[in-house]
Amino acid sequence: MNPPGDKKSLYSALSSMTTGIYILTTSCEDIINGMIVSWATQISYEPPLVLVAVHPKRYTHGLILKSRSFALNILSTEQKYLVSRFKAPEINNRFSGIKWRKGKTGSPILNECIAFLDCRLVDTYEPGNHTLFIGEIIDGDINSNEKPLSNIEYGKSYLGNT
Image 1 (cartoon, rainbow, N blue to C red):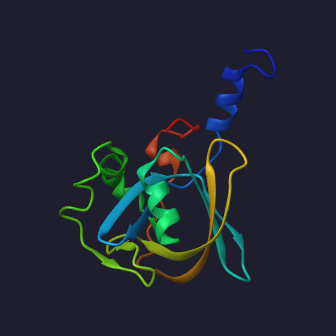
Image 2 (image 1 turned 120 degrees about the horizontal axis):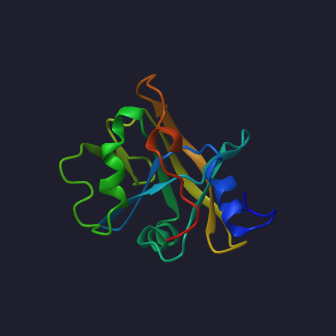
């Protein structure tokens, strides 16, 4: 057992937190992109707001700042295969072979996700090494009642590395 306050203990404790695994998408002019996020949560009902944390080194970060919008695509446990595609460093082929449509904000909505939240960026905060994007949900829907993918089914937890 590690001593209290030890970094290894801290990371072990953080990795035991349950988080969803989502595909965060955005578009700016003719550019679309998506990435995997797990640090996302609802923060208000009225107005409906969500918060997503993104490291500033991620390509999607700059696109969200320019477009002022993003969408959270909620995956099912059966869609783990999409994680590696949207996690890979190669960004040019992430959407090839995947059916999607433009949401009200212009952000890509994956047709086969179990639900989506299309958001207009209303605020940003930089309290640490990630930017917190707060989005007002302007559209959303559920496509199926399948079980959402979490870090438990995925078998890994994101602890803040880019």
